[in-house]
Length: 149
Image 1 (cartoon, rainbow, N blue to C red):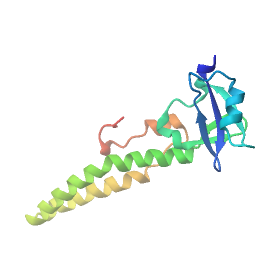
Image 2 (image 1 turned 90 degrees about the vertical axis):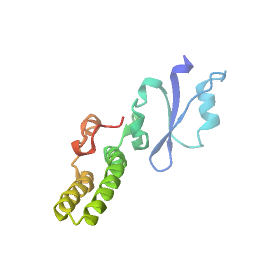
Image 3 (image 1 turned 90 degrees about the horizontal axis):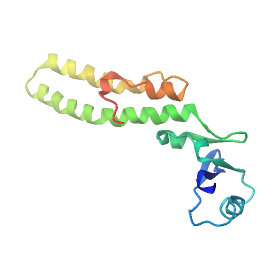
Image 4 (image 1 turned 45 degrees about the horizontal axis):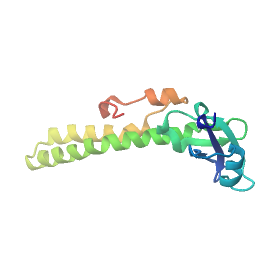
């Protein structure tokens, strides 16, 4: 059944593009590939289940001549660290306000505590991440609070 099939092809240097056939497409997927995939570009027709199901790492998909798609762990780690950065931004902003209040009240002890918390938040991007996708997804520093997704 064509509804469960997708066309994947190499895009750019090593990226992957996905063609989702329209439900109204009446010709074969080979004809659609001929129409939509750039000339002399490798492609595969795959079952939908062959696509990685976790779209958090969509930009880490890279072309593999054998399997079609693989996930680049280095890119996946970069994506995960970006989640850390987004989660820590409001935390640091709040601490900035608390720090200024501590400065205004000349509370140097509190200033040092807040500075240490801010540094700990900056250091989360130095977290050593595992080399598997499941391991990466399981790693969330406690200092960032609850995982937002």
